[in-house]
Length: 356
Image (cartoon, rainbow, N blue to C red; front, top):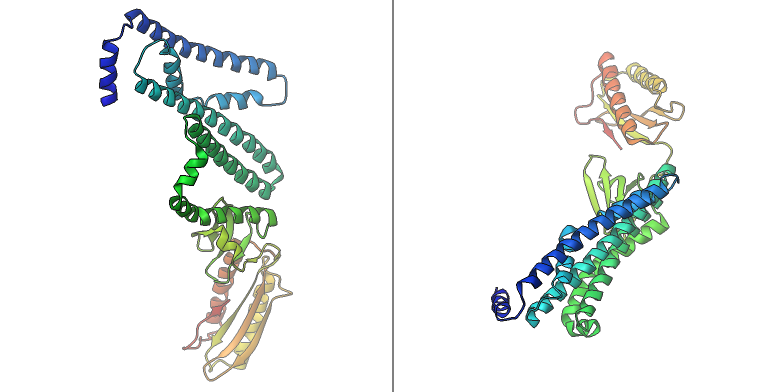
């Protein structure tokens, strides 16, 4: 506020005439109009010369030009249109620094847009071949390059306005060390993400599980900092990439078939004939189900103790899709309950059907 008041006082005592301000306003408007006309001409020219080719350069360049921000353009136009006016040194420095910041930010936005469009087109090409590894790698590289571009732009701006970047970093001292320690884990996760993409311990779509059985699910996204896993309960599990590399992971991608086993505990007053009939009924049930490999599934009267007679059931699926597995398992459980009721058999009082 003080800067504005001082410059109003400064301008009031200057010899700058009204025609000078009129000239600046006209120049400001001309710069904006010239830019819009140039932008439209470039787009029209490119489209006319590329419409007969199979390349989509016109769409790419048009999309890049759309990232030119009007607010930044206004700052740049204001700077050039006021070059003939006289201001205090303080205000001239502010205008100069603002112009440089606006110009650098605009260039960075265009470069960032070009990087994203380039990798997006690459990802679209790879999508047709369903190569999920390359899709993730392109997405990863796009974000890394964009971050590097902005860091370089920030360093360039500080250097351009007179800061000695090397001395600035050195002067940070303990503060710089604290920042370095704070970002250490972030950089560790980013490097771990690159190692995951390069070594491919798992891919998007793989079903993986950790030593903790509750931490298991399908990989949905491999990001810069973390990996997102969709659990069996449809919960979103977010795990830092560095934690993944430091853990023991079981990748079930190569598993062609799913398997489950469970015990049925029957009351001790169940007769041998009833047990034999139930075993046969369940075996037939498994063989008739199209989702189950009946030849490799088995039903056996396993054992009995002072509490129950135990039938052991082992089911092997023909495929490995989780949803099919869960649906079939539920279907078999309901069918077994109906068979038990049909045979007028009772479950053991101190046991229930357990599974693994």
